[in-house]
Length: 458
Ligand code: EPZ
Image (cartoon, rainbow, N blue to C red; front, side, top):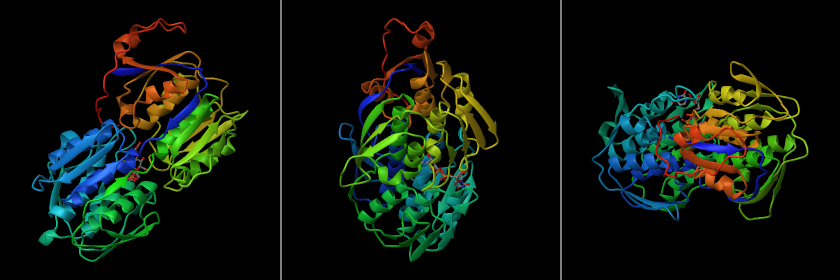
């Protein structure tokens, strides 16, 4: 298995481009099942989760034509007789649940394996099924699979409440909104997720001929149509990758210029960074969702109170990265996780690096320390792993991060891109890293570079 070896202490400086959003691309790839005409998506990141979705769609009868250089993929749902999303792929990438709605709406039936849980929680899909039932589907469970049928071959529009104690479900909203585009009549989704990825999906579906109003608000109205066509759509930039890079600049005392940055949908994160003393300067430009900005560490890092919430609140996917930053703040911070209360796999690992963290249920008190110390740590889920990389960049000495396949699910060639702006980070296989002496003046090692492989779902 690959590991990252990081020599901390380098201030990052330079320019990075933010890639297209994994979490926008995944439901959009599934949306190609709503039509038998070609759908082209641009700026789709080269990630193992995306690769898993490609493999899943291929088993569902979709022909794919990919250009990795331009990150463009054209999909055509050619064989609509294959409608079983099996466990062997679903267990590696739970977003495959988003194929349920489109297949049910277009093909009239679908068999989709229940996705497993993961490191951040048990990840139920009850609201996805609630939405499909509301649209008239017959839903049964058989040997771990969801077996769904639309009576008469077509779903019927309905009103459905998708809220829960946590707020709303992002992929649940995506699934129901996609299914409703071909239902007979009007669908109203109440307590819909307002994430930018939902807005971008609605933009794609509208370009395919869907009739959607209110995406980005808690109430989305969909007028069902009989047929959807193909289109050519560019995926929104990845706000979580952008936030991760912003923290990388701040935590290393550096300065990064970020291009293709979706600043307009990142205000909760940028406000918290600014309140903590980080300097963020936006360059004048046309599209606030594809902005260019410079992020620079301030003289002093102030503590903060961070609570994760549904958009436009602070995103849970940046919680670990910001906790790593706040470990070095001048004072005590409080981090509360309201979306996935168990999403603290990074706490023990950060503590191994000298962080002073005190967890009480879904809240962690972060007592700022003067510095972190490099250590061997274990990646556990995608965003926790990103938090460990950021801590390693700032720590004194060497950090070895094991199981980096978690990172490859959501960050494209992270080590290469960080090294381009000054980070001392290399990818090697764990046998090499284990043999490397734990001193700062390390001999150059032969780095064995292999293309990342899909790892188990986090
Ligand atoms: C999406 O997951 C993202 N994944 C997650 O990002 C992100 O953390 C999450 O939204 C919250 O923002 C993708 O978009 C591929 P949810 P999703 O349904 O849609 C509960 C990353 O690191 N819930 O919004 O699966 C659930 O338990 C990933 O990129 C139900 O109770 O998350 C959680 O407490 C991790 N029943 C809350 O809702 C359901 O049927 C939010 O989950 C569905 C969800």
